Image (cartoon, rainbow, N blue to C red; front, side):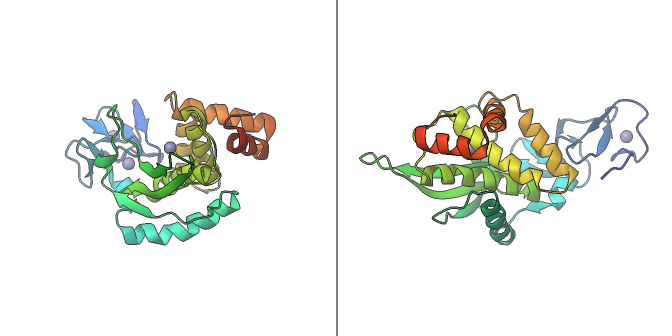
Length: 236
Ligand SMILES: [Zn+2]
Ligand SMILES: [Zn+2]
Ligand SMILES: [Zn+2]
């Protein structure tokens, strides 16, 4: 998608413009009342092809074309994702069920949209955690869908490995690392842009956690990091 023309007026931007995660350009002079929830493209301002994502956010036509909107579409991707995760060393001992849910149901207490959630149950007497299933927002692009499934399966994998009480930063950081490793193997510019945006994420848990775990992997290697996290509940 190395198009040099603006997606609204079809001519090369002569003034300032915004580049979405797909690499699509939009001149800033075009009126916009928000951005695509998934790629950051300005819009929708009544433009054709935009659709509702959540009650307060919209999805651009490019993201909508790649959307995983139904459970059947999700099921097509899951066996491939499991294989790719096993190749990354994160195979699950037990299968977990993946379901699609309305993204509005995944807005957290702070009002921020999260794209997936792992349902877990911890037995008080034994502290053993069971993973009951993974919920993924309906309507993500295939690339977002894969990255979110891998992230959530990361939580399930940590639970199945019996990782003791992790800080939110370490837990989310490890899951973002898995998801980043999956994105890194995708050949598209969009996957590279998504991975970059996760690494630049200003969030103190997700972004800072990812950078902290990534730095630890650079110093100690992935095996030492995962052994330490699963055995002692902290980074080496
Ligand atoms: Zn334009
Ligand atoms: Zn978009
Ligand atoms: Zn998470």
